[in-house]
Length: 257
Image (cartoon, rainbow, N blue to C red; front, side):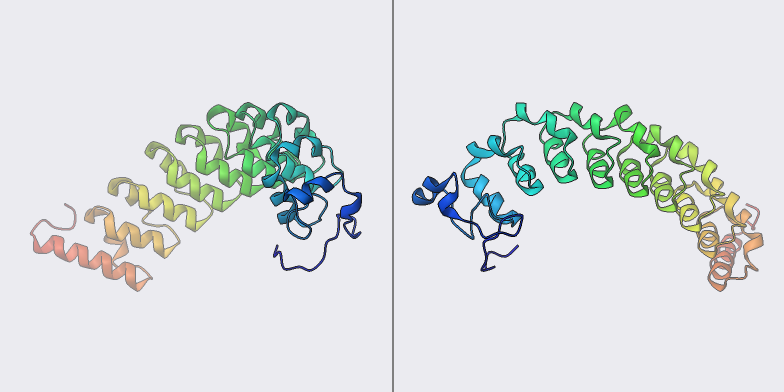
């Protein structure tokens, strides 16, 4: 929010009145300034600047009726006063509180009603404590979980309903689990799998319906597995398969080597 906005309105739209402010004395000492650093202003940047200048006053504003004031005050307030605000009605307040408290408090917000809070909570916890969030109703929360969960704990996300989540899983699961994903219903997921498989296992995907996977097979699978691909419907796949087989033949080993 730009400070060149030439108005000073409170959160209810009324003109800010310095004369009636409890912090009038601060104005004379440079502790606040109308339209620049004011706890009564409705603009978050001005409220934030007020508490940056006067962090010792934050404790007294944790119960303010305007959520912006509570949320910004929570960034400077005494930690021991913050736990009750984990139940605040506004998600911005809850997040500003939990990011300052010890991580054990984040466990209370794993099922927060707001997806943004749950997404951020997923960045604070890890291991077994993160595992319950693998089944979150919001796909982006699950995406965050898939990126952070230990690879050995990703088995329950292999069949996630969202392809983008499964793509992340395919990049991170242990190699021995990849075969369980070669028939995934989404080609982009299968491509992630194909790019990680060993050449020998990659041959199992030579009949995949997506040309990109068959191209990967033609590029890396043992040449003895490429016979079916020399007449592939895709020209790039045919070209790679034929080229590799030709090289093999030139070396005198034959296509079945």
